[in-house]
Length: 451
Image (cartoon, rainbow, N blue to C red; front, side):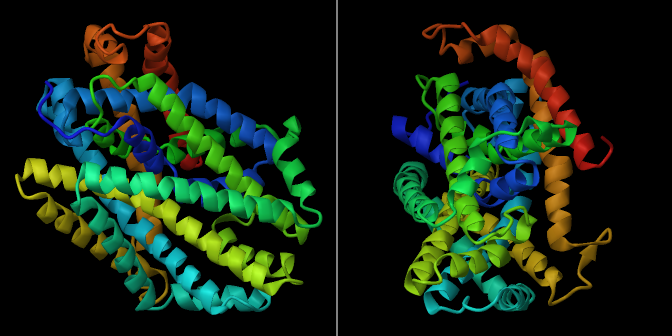
């Protein structure tokens, strides 16, 4: 089934795939989810979910991608032995394009806040910062422009190819992201009263753990690792036959968790220093944190502005590593299925995502009547992908590999054709057959509010 195909280098496998997982979900969503679910206790449950459920799901998508050695739709067809199974890949491509469309809007907000931080436009009281965000996000022009800029940056990387574009960008972006994160963590932890935030992150109170916390941790684990988007499948199609899939999944999950925890160390100590709660939901980074940075560094305004610039630059880099991976899903699909040049395929994806981003941005405020099924376009895309498409793609992958693909094929890929130990193969197969589908169904029902 293998064909001549560009492969990531050994370091590229880890950095590019980790970059696909590391994004706003780690630096934006993880901290406020932690704040809403009891701090350290939530983190422990989250780590358990990642390593017990997320890793088996990652390996499953890796197997499909490397075995199929093609875009997601063709890879699922090849591995499943039927055109019908290609539906999972088509579903992944559609999901990725929709997510990239609305993700570009939020990523564009990050670029605006880099500019605003440099210009000093975020100085003022809490009500001013909130009004600034509301006015900007509901504008008809600038949010669309910034979303377009972000998609253009992504487009440039993608058109340069797998090794010269994606891998090279990952080798630059991931270390830079990590350095920026460490710098802000150090600055945050040196603030007066910051240790209360550190304690909140690392001193668990198990009385906070209940079914809702567990299900939220499960959902965050699947969301953070990019399961169900065909992203891991697409990147795995560029893995070599010697790539250790289980080891790579462990390394990628470890990097993903480390950056999520460092994001908590960046935000919670600063919030604790000024007595602000970090559980304010999605508004945390655009409304709450600018005020936190001002208050925390009120005696040294230039430090506060510098931290603000670095923070939003960090968010932009994290978003870019994710948008690159989501863009590649569609680019690989159109290039291979429609047999067009890579640059042409990338342009198709960029234009589709720009159209979605424009509709999402306008629906928030400039054109409030732009709605689907009672939701603005932004919320509709978010709910459709998170509550329906992602769980559906993940569970169908588990069904395919757990029950339809011959066991010897799975064993060959898991052990690199018997060159690696098969110690965990049976445990992995059990998780894919029973544990992961059960967890995904539970997440799905929880998101719908049924459990």
